Every structure is written in C-alpha cells, then in structure tokens.
Length: 133
Image (cartoon, rainbow, N blue to C red; front, side):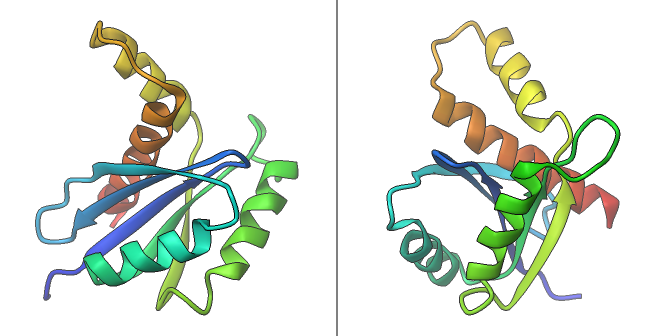
C-alpha cells in the first residue's frame, strides 16, 4: 500500500484543531489551530493542497450516551462544506479527546493555550483513526 497523508480536524465554533499523519508512519502530529473567522475553509483547502492530503478525518462529537448533540449537527454541517475541497471525508469518534489533550498538556508543566488543546485533540482523533485501521 502506498503511503498517503491524512489530515484531521477537531471542529469547534471558535477554533479548529488540525493534525496530520502519514499512513506509512502511523503517527499523528498536531499541526496547527485555525481561528473560525470566515477564512477557515480557504485555510483548510491550502493545507490539504500543501500537504497533498487525500483523506480528511473529522472528529465526531457525541454525548456520554453516544447520542448526537447540537455540536454533532454543527460538525456535520461543517463537513458538508468540505465536500468540494477534500477527496474523502471520514468521521472518527472524538470522545474525550479534548479532556485527554488537556490532561497531557497539564502533565508537561509548561504554559499552554486553548489552541494547543485543539491541535492536540485533533492529533488524538487522527491517532485513534490510524489505530482503528
């Protein structure tokens, strides 16, 4: 199997965490955090082109019972806007990724921002996707 670049998005209403991974290495890396300011689709398109990403993995939010929430609907609507930009869009359960990301950053004993949590959460979503395959 040839290797390909995957892009993951942790979609929020204020910020979008971005992570990338190469399928041959299977290690997801926090890439950057985008502000939701009206230019986010162009920025994602630029990253997809720059990194030659074929698949976009989007974190899929659900509540503790596994049911869809308001955030689920927001993420699905956002994913719909990416259909012209990305070759393939897949969803990956994002349960507790932001919590895990924040716990990890706290253990580092270094200052961090909310944007750091979002990018790291995206890398956890992508890592889960890679390990599930």
